[in-house]
Length: 98
Image 1 (tube, helix red, strand yellow):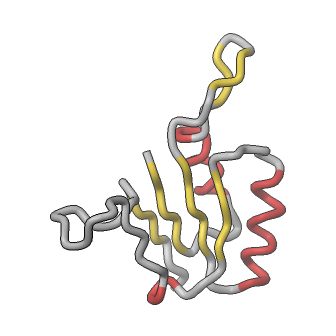
Image 2 (spheres, helix red, strand yellow):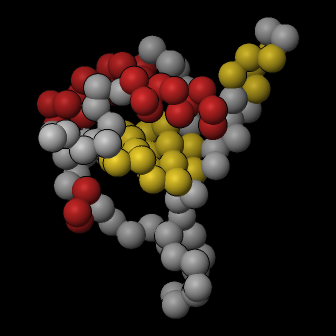
């Protein structure tokens, strides 16, 4: 599963999502990640806090970006343009501040 988490800071929901897609422990054996999370926050200071929070999880299944969600780059999963399914994320979480 691939997840785009917009407005991700301070990171508590991102950490919960990471437990779902990032593998975990099964009988004290570390499992490989089954997906990835792109955690984005438009404010660079909040993104810095997010990095520090996610560093505790120590997972290769997450990376942090800092850009305005309105202008987030379109990432195509398929090489062919114009396919019926565009983008590469299975889910998008956008918990915008009031």
